[in-house]
Length: 388
Image (tube, rainbow, N blue to C red):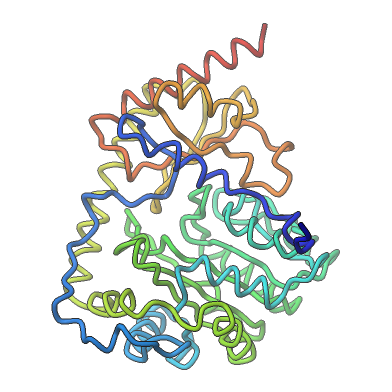
């Protein structure tokens, strides 16, 4: 059967496969970015107009676009509602941007490591992915400048607030410097912010797009981490030169985002009820983060190094004795533990052994310690086997 040449570049999503394997109730899963089910808010449907079952506008519900634009302006993002496009989760933003910018061989600039499903989307369309290493407060600036001098990327895809998978939050200085470099080299920015609201300290930093003076940009977010992932409601905000093209690509993809999910998101965004829910969510996840930190100190202090995440849903561990963590999946699942190997978050996975991404939001604290104990035992056994 003759498929498009693009299909040959389509890689299966390792995380979706792991999540499928982790569906068994006895499995303690540190793998996905799953919100805690206890914190999924109870939603009401009784007041929803029957008209929401009808076809809608490709741009999204006008009131929801207004609410998102207002929230973005409060963060310093210069926009109005006619720059907002409601999408089927922020993952769709990556698909639309890939369709807009990428032909086989198009260069794009990414962090190393970066979001696994972004790599999947960009590589599907044939992108040549150029990377810049992450430091504790954002990308290494000398390396970023060198990449921009040597290459002409169609865009830079960055996750500056509690990056997935590394949990890095760019400093104010790094945000200013990155914005200045993108302006200097006239490189479009795609800024992905799914974790911005999941912050556990007093720190904050405005989006990079709010600091750009001339470069084009797309800013994208979602309600998946704060309300219900099952709604599949995200948004993008784009500069006027990009927006019409993204809208037409959205129309050709699925006509419009589901209106039922949009209606539900609109009942929450900007409301006192939503602000209260976010405060509860932060307190709940902070406790789970602290519980994981305690368990990691007990079971992983000799095995790995890590930074305590100040937000988001993940710990990013670097093994002191690197090995290909993909080889640990099978023995870990045999012990009813699931985790996310670090290698697939890199463009060249075989060159970056020895990282693990561990989610702290999903496993209940009373099972957390046992799960990490088992995972540590699997790693120690693999390292012993490698040494002999």
